[in-house]
Length: 303
Image 1 (cartoon, rainbow, N blue to C red):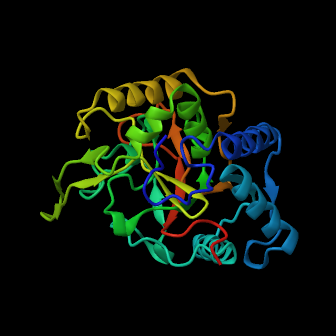
Image 2 (image 1 turned 30 degrees about the vertical axis):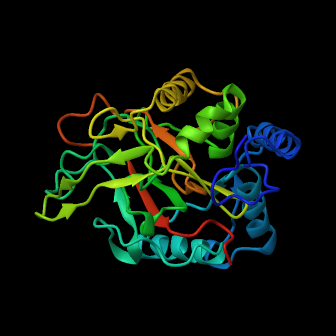
C-alpha cells in the first residue's frame, strides 16, 4: 500500500508495514490494559514534584497518552493556579494556548456560566459533552497537543469523564480497514466552517486531517458533533466516520472513566474525551462543579 506523505518509510504508521505495526499494536494494547488499573499518580507537593512523580506521569503519557493524578486539595485559588502551571512546566508543556476565556495563569474555568462570551457553549453548561479532542476547530498553527484538566469542585451528580487513547482509536480503525486511516489522513478530511464569535470577530474555517503524524507521535483532531461540521465527500471517509462514531458510542474495553474529585486531574496528550451531563436537579443556571483547564501546543514531555 502506498506510503502516506510525511511518514518515515520504516514507521509503523506506514500502511502496509505490517511487521512494525504489529509490534507497536501489541505494545499499545498491553499498555492500555495496564492503564485501566494503574490508578492515580499521587503528587505530594505540586510546586516541587518529586522525580519519581514526574517520571511516572511521563511514562504513562508515553505509553497511553493519559495520566490521572491526585494532589492535596487547595482552597487558595491563586496557589492552586500556580500549582497547575508549575506541574505543567515541570512536565515540559511550555507556554499555554491563548484561549479567549483564560483567566489568571492562563487557566480556563469550566463551570456553568451565563457570561456573554460563554453563554450557549456546552462546556459552560450542565449538558453532556460529546467525544472530541480539544481545539479541533483551531487553525493548523495552533494545534492543541496536550492539556491538563483539574477538579476544583465536583458535581453533586454526574460530570463523569471518559478518555480514550488516540492510538487505540487508530488501531481499531486500521484493524477494520487500513483504507479508513488513509481517508482520515486526507488533508481535507474534516472541515469546521467559519463562524462569527460573540465579539464580532470571524473565526476562519479550519480544514485538515483527523490523523497526522509528527515524528513518532500520532496527532488527532476529531469531534463527534453533527452540526457545523463538514466531512470530505468520499464513501470511504463516510464509512470511517460512522465506524468511529459507533466505536465511541458503544464503548471500547480500553476506555478510562473517572469522576474527578477535588485535587484530582488528568494530564494527557489531547486524548479523545467526553463528559456526562451533571446536576440535573439544580435549579436554573447553577452547579457547584468547577474544572480548571490549561491547553498547550506541546505534548507532555516535550523538553
